[in-house]
Image 1 (tube, one colour):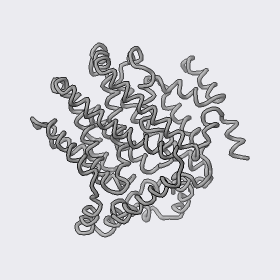
Image 2 (cartoon, helix red, strand yellow):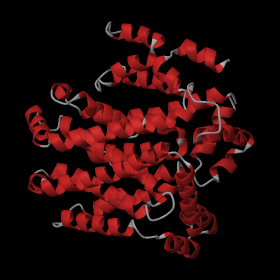
Image 3 (cartoon, rainbow, N blue to C red):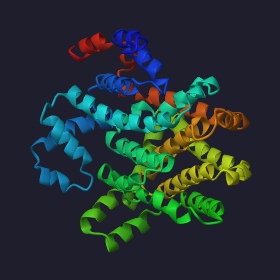
Image 4 (cartoon, rainbow, N blue to C red):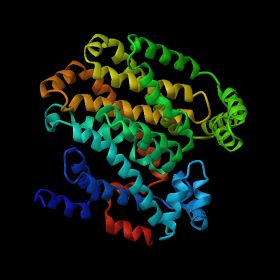
Amino acid sequence: MNRSIIPKLLFVFIWPFPAMVSVFKDLKSKYLLLFFMLFAVFVGINFLEGPNSDMYRYVTSAVYYRDNSFVEIFLEKDFFYPLVSKLITLISTNFYFITICFTTIYYFIFYKCIKVIADNADPAYQTYLPWFYVLALYTVLPFTVVTAFRFNSAVLFFCWCLLEYTLNKKRNFLYLILLTPFIHFSFLFYTVLPFVFLLIKNLRKRVNLTLLIFGLSVVYSNTNLSGFVDTFSKQYLTDSISTQVDAYTSEEGQENNSKRYAKAEKEGSAKRAINRGIITYSRQILMFSLLFFILKRRRFLMQHKFYEDLMIMALLSYSLTNFASSVLHGNRFFSVSNFYFYFVLFYLLTTVKFSYAQNKKFYYENKRLFHFISLLIVLNFFNFTYMAKIVFNLPNLFFGNWLTSYFIING
């Protein structure tokens, strides 16, 4: 074992959080997976056992699937969570055992996304990229959102497949991505993304067409397409699928959701309104930062087809997200678009596909914009972390260790 890792392994038992972060900053570390799994376990034991998060609901509901047959489970439209729940609860129904299993699965998929970038990164990236670029890579999907286990596992799986396909040219992931709706049904429509890209990839005016699609999506994002989608599903899809589509797109659900947010805004604190505002506006700013970059560097992109391909895919992702935003819960797909966009951006700044000099030049020519994007992501991460104080034992997560966690869990 490398001697340099031994002090970190010892320190991880004394003060886990900074020890893990010290390894995460080196994307080329051989021990990245080990520390990802240690981080997953430590996050899992620092959930608060209370009804304040989706994770609590997932954990307490997991026991329901223990006695279900595998046939019943696979008849579910998105059987990933029921299947995982059954396998876990056959071993133990302890709250923290289940949270650890869920966080381990989640962070393993996250690690696979990071590994795509790490395998392609020039080790010299640390000589010119500021530290907060790496921090943004890990926090563009904040670790606290693991509480929405089912949806965000689907986000990571989808992005992992998309990254493998677009960056590593592994065509089998183009088909593997079709499994995402079995993790979360709402991805049924979103899986068209890589196929839309394939349709326009070889067109002469593909950038213009992508910009047109994006423009239309911005217009339609401010309309309510719930009624249209609901009617379409009832007329052309099976009853079971239509029922599930209705859960995400019904006009009644849209209205109830708007009322619930309005009530929460009225009764909630100014701090909560600020938190939500930061999330909403940072999504929009990231999206239009991509658009600004494409328009500003259009000649450069035309000369570098690979760069252009990735930017087109990212903008198409935002376009689909905008269309999805016109129905209930559709704005959650900004998690996909933001994640893919920043991972691709980081890849272009560090990839071994191009020379060190070219990567460095690309960084310095766009430094102001890339600084802005990275710092915005980090700001949003701190915002999400503040909001998660009712879900996690944050003081123990950041400053405690395994022993303090043991005493907290056992009273």
